[in-house]
Image 1 (cartoon, one colour):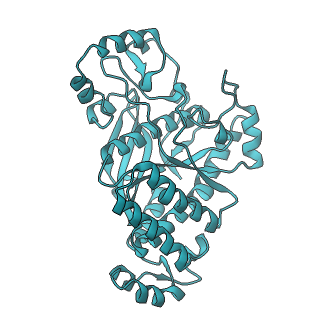
Image 2 (image 1 turned 90 degrees about the vertical axis):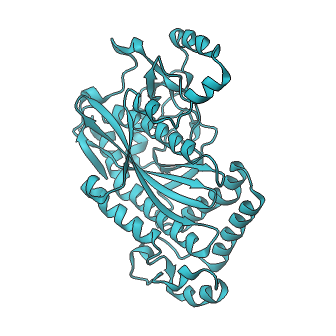
Image 3 (image 1 turned 60 degrees about the vertical axis):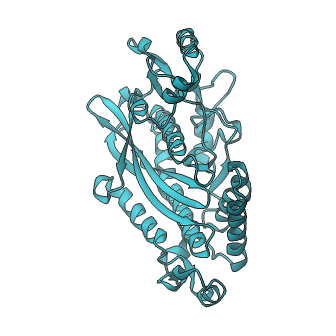
Length: 374
């Protein structure tokens, strides 16, 4: 799944250029110039730092070397081959064809207050949802709902939501997906961005916080990817890596989809900003790998869970004049996993995203891996 603008040799993120003295990496990459700047800023008041360093400030995100901008998700303003994915996600998010036909009667009887189960929600063995993976069981649905309701009632923190709800949901999706052998997911809360790919801001702006996301979906290595991994340049103190992070466990597994989580009622703007900064670094890495290939960058899905409510955004990098701009398209609310209907909607959408990763992102990634050898 691809975007609007072809890549050329100028797209590769350079370590520094002639004008780079005015720029510094965000997240606090070590340079003497930045250290001086940070030292001066540290003498400012705490309230001033608080007001200016927030990553959710639109003016800061727009001041990046590759600016980040937000747009509404209009089917007419996205790449043609992204439209099918968006349309199908919207169908699942609305509940259409998300519940196995044979479970509908028992679910309606058990969950009488979940009126969404009475709508046109069932799917048949020949439907799109059936092709994406196995059916959920009533026990699996009840377990997710129970855990999410418990976290909600106890007002649990983000880490507990991750371990009790979000992580298990991703694991379950991975087990029932028809692409279970090809696409995986993992918790990356301990990962750090590779300084080479961090977005940069003008020195007049404070560095953005170094927080990263919580989960990613990745490609399991094929023969093509394994060979390309061995051909990657070696980075001192790190080694080979397909990704924009310094997280060794998935260095040979290209990241396809990223997810940020927040506790219920808190941090939505911050969570979105973390996703935006993360995906900007991701695009920097993908552009470096694509090099001079006349390839378009993919239209990347981004998941955001705030408590039990899951949402989907999309990111795309395109050229505007001489500048590459990261566009964040928002958003589709997938569902609330405290309800059975919400669980079915979220699971169906995640299965669809795994299908996209295998059938769209993998072919694109393998093409750029083999471009130099062609």
